[in-house]
Image (cartoon, rainbow, N blue to C red; front, side, top):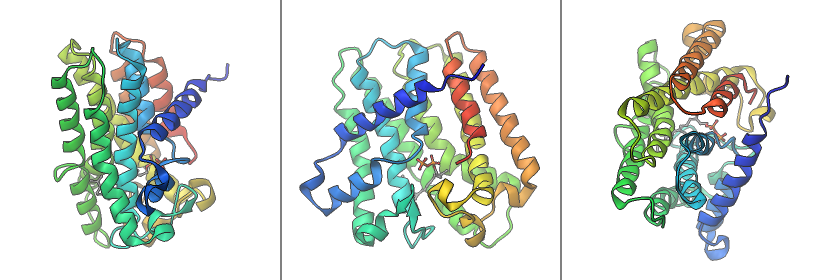
Length: 297
Ligand code: GRG
């Protein structure tokens, strides 16, 4: 029987709507235009998918708008990081999500400002959630988790190490560390923050969800590295072989393609075992996990 992935499409429509609602009016300025351009119509929306599916499995007694706000917040932080990642001072990529990168279309200063505006917007959305079943204390915890994920001990340090390791040989352990910080922390934060919406979630269940997120976050990055050197620019919507061109350390470079694939598979299996240990319906999260390592772009 062919697996039914229609829930992914349903969530995809839901996140597009939530993002549209969360963004400032497009015609306010060139910056708001750049924000709309970079956030809407593109991307796999993996982080919102995780948020919707974890929320789904926990059967939360909250408004749909609350989950939409969480999903929009996680995706906005990601979009912010992509805009800055593409800048000349960072990876200097001209193409993102199948179209010219934000700085190519709007200029460097506008791209920096668009990214700068998106980050506080992501946190403002959480602050503004109006749901009688969500306490102010939980909202603060969620904001703290998202802030830490992108701060100096999270995504920023991952990016810093990634840039500093261009052109030099590093160990597999250091490569893991870079990606745990650069990609994994935000993915884990999306899952962790969603778990906090269930205020009586047992500690062991929270730990299993976080372990799931850590495993799938690293599997996702290994697959990203594999696709960079095996897929086309057209399929990826961003320049293929950009890692090699920037002399980046990648999993295929350090351990080879075959070993990279098998590592992604075993991390995915570990993630699925965590999900299976939980007393909730995690079927859809299991399907998303498989999609993450089997995707072709
Ligand atoms: C503090 C937010 C923040 C940023 C400053 C620029 C930077 C530091 C960090 C960059 C981190 C980064 C870009 C990580 C993501 C790497 C990655 C795997 C990107 C691709 O994600 P996908 O495949 O992209 O989910 P789509 O387009 O599908 O959303």
